[in-house]
Amino acid sequence: MAATFSLNVTASNKVFYNGPAEYLQIITLTGSRGIMAHHAPVIYAVETGQMSIVKPDGERVTVVVSNGVCTCANNRVTVLVDTCETADEIDVRRAEEAKERALEQLRQKQSVGEFKRSQMSLARALTRLEFSSQKKHYI
Amino acid sequence: MATTRELRDRISSIDNTLKITNAMYLISSTKLRKARVELQQTEPYFYTLRTTIQRILRHVPEGFRHPYLDLREDLRKKERTENYRTAIICVTADKGLAGAYNHNVIKRTEEILKARPRHKLYVVGEMGRVYFRSNGIDIEEEFHYTAQNPTLHRARVITGRVLDLFHDNEIDSVYIVYTRMRNSLEMVTETEQLLPIDKINKGVFGQVIPMVAGMEEFRLVPTPEAVIDNVIPDYISGFIYSALVESFCSEQNSRMTAMDAANRSGNKLKQELSIQYNRTRQAAITQEITEVAAGARAQKKNR
Image (cartoon, rainbow over all chains, first blue to last red; front, top):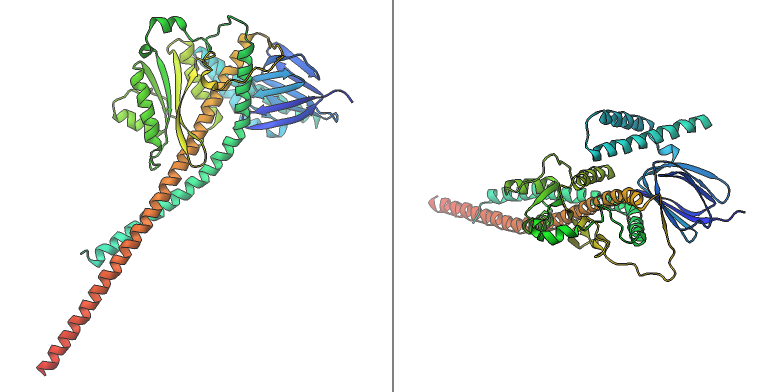
């Protein structure tokens, strides 16, 4: 059995995962990162994208997370994100609508902050859509 | 002495009012239960976020500067505190009939308004908006958010609005006035400085976590700026969200208390009035009987 670390994934509306994990893959601002046991102490800025957790029994859980931070210290990893959704929780139609809305807003003149926000909501919508379409391929 | 009819009307009007207050009591107790659940769900996120930010702030390099953390020393030296451009977010209820809840928040906000004449005022909830408008205090337009059913999305929109102002250098600091539930009975009106984050005085972070011996050095990846940029807006929207939820809870709680008191005094009044009503009615009946008896006796004499 591979070494494990304790992982805590907290989203703004729930604690998604709290327990041991073998491997964590997460998208940071500088690209995808894999985190294993005894990681060096570091704080990553997390990007909107897919996150995979490999549990000690080998089961792999993939979810969509949005912006946040990931802290590694003393063999404990805390992932703190705005939202965290499994494939079942994603509402494809809502994501579709959000994407359209964001694209429409991006076409208009906006302040820097508004632009960033529309960009973020577009990223969220696209990640959700991509993720849910992948799930269909699997089945 | 009031006539029986007057008393009856009064009692039935109290009955109607009691129906309303009773219904409002029940509604606010259900809403309170719902809001409590929401609050419990966000609490772990919020506390973890708080400790994470404290940790990040401890590990930023010496002499690190960031607009969110900048205390604007030059401004502080140049200007007096009265001249700070301040944005104030004030969380009130949409409806009255909640005891002193709205009044407390408004009073606290007015204190800050007086201390900081150069302000922008953002009001959540209809009661506050109506109050400030009728008192001739300028409030920001196009900020129509209700206090009902707070959502993270609404908190995010409010945050975006405030951060935009902060980025464009239109304001120097951001305050929020809201009501917190200390326990299920006690509510406190709170004022917090959201921006800039006061690293030295610990500002919103309150207590300082004691330094643990042999604490590890953190690397902030990719850069401290990027990490702070990523996490502070979330923190602020998280704070605003929890403030909205706390306020909503407090509103429902104070409405419950107010309606409970109204129910109680309504029932008391009703009881007093019905006693009075029965007395009057009895007096009228007695008088009628006496009159009839006297009349009958008079008739008998005449015969």
